[in-house]
Image (cartoon, rainbow over all chains, first blue to last red):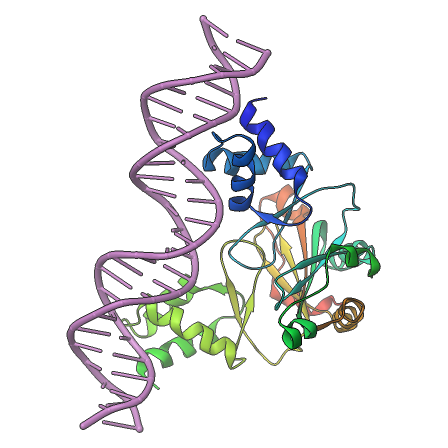
Length: 141
Length: 141
DNA sequence: CTAGGTGCAAAAGCTTTGCATCTAC
DNA sequence: GTAGATGCAAAGCTTTTGCACCTAG
């Protein structure tokens, strides 16, 4: 348990939402200036393994991560094309979906992803977006 | 309409399943040896735009494509961790999901992805997998 | 003739890795 | 003392791009 890893842990849990490896590097360096890019990239998979961090793939070349704050494991994402936000939505029915379809194929489900890409009319009209993470908990399916 | 593009079109529609840009390059070169990597990468987005090819993102760094053979636009994928196959599954209810959740967030849905990662017991037990694309049409949700 | 397509090779962007050094225990 | 972590810089991999050339219409 080194100082660099502690700085990375701390930076991760200060994050309120999604972040990239590079953003995490910046934040961790504010805490411990000696944290290097390699250490961040080497530590992230460990955090994901231990379920402290969740990896969120939205189909870009960039990987996103988020602190895994006691949420159920079945989350869907709504990705806004305009305001560039990722909303996390509880999606309990996904478990049913995965087991149903996998069973028909003779496969055992490991994980599931459900993502909606959407556009934000408010952003398009006003040039800004008033939504924030507090909205996340108001929708689910 | 150049010879290289025709070779790429032809290679695309000879594909029965998912392929990567690099695989397409190889196949296209079998038809016209002068096809270059740049042309493949420049042509693929055009094919996607014109709905001749569908882009399938499974969260790896690699982009997959498949010929868009008259399937409904709402497809889910089951990705087998062991036999490395991607099964396409009709998922008509996804439309409902996207509009429901997006409406709650005040967003307009553009597209949706539903993907299940699964493991293949047959592959694990025998070291090979007998499933093939014919199975795809037997499951849906 | 010329707008646009092409090939080549270099660049870009994110992530991984080899290697020598360092450090927590 | 030593197993394992670290930093740096280089390499890897897929995709994109600048540029000069070529070609379809």
